[in-house]
Length: 483
Ligand code: UD2
Ligand code: MN
Image (cartoon, rainbow, N blue to C red; front, side, top):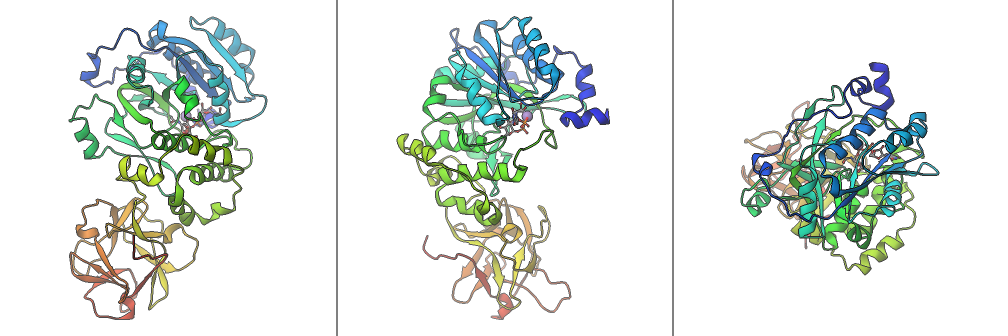
């Protein structure tokens, strides 16, 4: 079992022992089970790209589509082989595909191209009105397709994702995903799930069966009207192998007038892995940073600084030519990133307005506040200023919070230490008032100053009564007073 695990980074032995057409629980909300959808839904082609996928997971994906979709809604399944090296994905796959009751097209990339260009190839070959993309290790559950297509029928500019359920990489147990999380991203441009904010619950008047407007998507599983996919600029063909395309598409859809939604009545399972099983020609970091730079340069305007200041190393990565993507943005008259932050993602980790971004240096010790790679609920530390971004990047925001990515400096008692907690946007213990003349950071709730007290042998940023000493003076990088 352990040996087989290494091949695909999931328990291949378990997967191979499970039937390709296994039953799954119906994990939908009750309100979803009784919904009635229009008779004439647009039909869809299913596009699945893969590189060295295992037989059982790939074919279980295909079988689950066939078994759990109304036959007339699935025009075809397009499999795009991204230059796999495994024998069984050759003729054996073609022979098996011919036995299936839905037309299956198999396309082969001539060289390792990455999932983005493989999907472009697959999409170009589709005949359906809608394109539905799936990863090659998914399982569709009962009723997954109708709500996706019904939403596109209502609005062809809605790009829709199912709830992504979790298929355990260890046991292949099927576990329902939550309808209370949606997609976001952090300063390093990693996709992350965050709780659906109250404002979005209110907009849906508390009806959890209605689609959630999500700032970003995970990337692997979604349906999009085919002509809209083309109109809105499909994918950036300059992106390699893996990563970044999901945020690129998310920003593009929102900024250029579409919408991105999680249709909570649709559930599709996916095997989430802890490591990637395949190679990244050119190096993992190089590839992902190149893709991320392309999306940052085209879509994020000045807010790309958050990405560049936290990971200054990426500036050395060549991202190629993005001029055609920039002209696309111009031709579609897309809105600025600030509009996206204000209207689509106000609870973003990137503040729309901020006073400073970069290190926070103590005048007395000449050292910098440093999150020391610690996690939520732990104390913030300090360290020699290294100018390398990372753990020493903080932003002093217009809301007067000091945040590093999704964590805010927070003090809950007099003379207390400074800990890092999830930003709550409620001011309170997370509000600091910077005095640009005295250089002090006043914690408003306690009326004390942020200090680096020297009397203790272990120094940690701490609150003390304000006393005008140099250890209470702080220099904020890239400080601007007028927002
Ligand atoms: C997530 C997405 C994935 C993609 C990725 C960011 C989900 C469930 N998955 O990562 O679809 O958006 O984020 O890029 O949202 N593949 C190729 N050629 C390659 C590399 C991968 O064809 O060079 C295939 C791979 O076999 C799989 C699909 O692309 O079918 C996605 O790859 P993954 O499963 O490794 O990505 P995942 O789920 O970690
Ligand atoms: Mn995947």
